[in-house]
Image 1 (cartoon, rainbow, N blue to C red):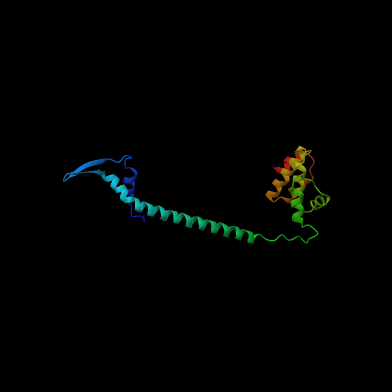
Image 2: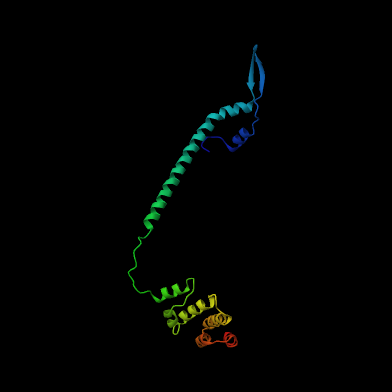
Length: 177
């Protein structure tokens, strides 16, 4: 500690009584009031405590200035890192964008997506998801989705396309097994 007060001295000062006791001493006919030793120690520690408080205040101010500087730099770096918004020049969406739009709520199957579903397994699965999640979807639509997904996971593409064409729950359950 820069003030020169040890932890033990600080503890002793902290635990000092609130009242100062005096003793009367007589020396060659003179009577004097002498404060207790604890009070004298506290009085001698005051200049060191004042110096320590000033040092800590300076350190706190330095740390606050450093924090402010870092926050400014972070904001500046963040604002410089933001890319400029450029308008897209493409006119036709990619198949991935079509599928992403298809999967966005509310689910509606466009004629283009339905046509792509005839040959593309991913598009077929997306169309089936849209159909099975619609409000008027029946158990057959949901079962068809499960059977198609299960067949795709198993790598059984024949079962996948067969499940897409099935119209009854009994046949779909047989495909899923």
